[in-house]
Image 1 (spheres, rainbow over the protein chains, first blue to last red):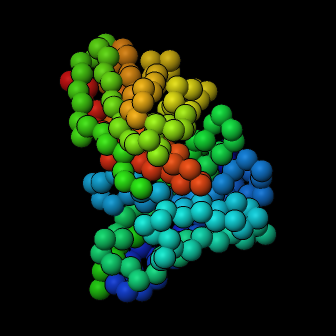
Image 2 (cartoon, chains in turn green, blue):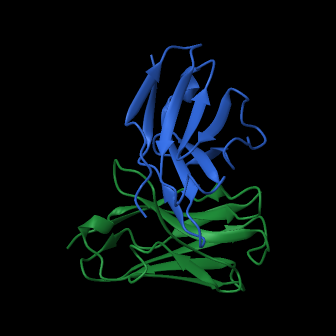
Length: 122
Length: 110
């Protein structure tokens, strides 16, 4: 059973860069079936897809965040990370890391971290 | 990609059935049979209830079912139970490894 856990600062100043890391346990990060991704949820609002990464390093991003988001992977540490630059108050959200099972006939987000609240404020 | 459109809230009494709609476009729901539904209880991470329009993961009760017609997908919960009270989000594949979510629907069990 895969487990994912987010870590990183809970408070970021406006215009700075938000950085979060997700640690994967209970399975391999270098697997053919899963893509590793980030999803966020502003307080009281819906979910927003940020992007995903394959263990080889290939990335795909939400076009609306592509210019500010960078997702990377460190297979030796079984971790993947998110950096979001030039943050504003609108980036305040619970950030989830998740495992996307992107196999033909499936395409579901099967495992989620507990979520990490990041507040953008001076 | 614009968010998929869901009703903000639905309600039903125990034992009844409710249906939550999720309307997208030809670019997402209308083209791909990769609509999934997620249940989220307050303060908890989402949990997949339906994937690929109408498939249930192991462990999800068969009271939960999904369907799709044109650009609109639907989640039906029959035999409502108190524990079903939660927020429900739909998600559709939109091509090029991009996904789009709905705004979420709050289900109240009366």
